[in-house]
Length: 77
Image 1: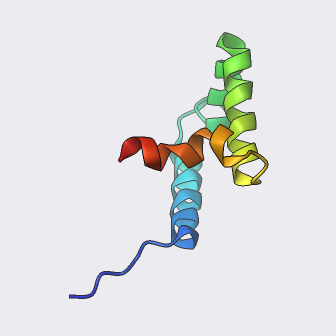
Image 2 (image 1 turned 90 degrees about the horizontal axis):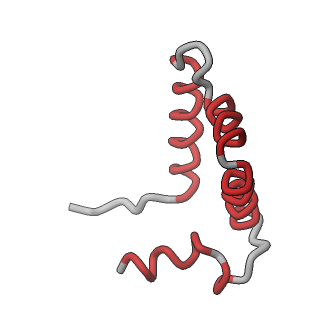
C-alpha cells in the first residue's frame, strides 16, 4: 500500500475549513477574534508576542535558530 504524504497546501485547506466552521458554529461572543480580544485584556504582552512570532515565522522573517516553530521538530524528536 502506497502512503500519500501530507502536504502543506492540504493542511492550509484543513485549517481554513476548521476555522470557518468554528466561526459559523461559535456561540455568541465566542468567535476566535473575540477570544483574542479577551486574551489581550488579560495578557496583552504575551498574546501580542505570540501573534508577532507566528506572523514572523510564516513570513520567514526569523532566523531559524530564533524561530520557535522551526525548532519544534528537533526538540520533539
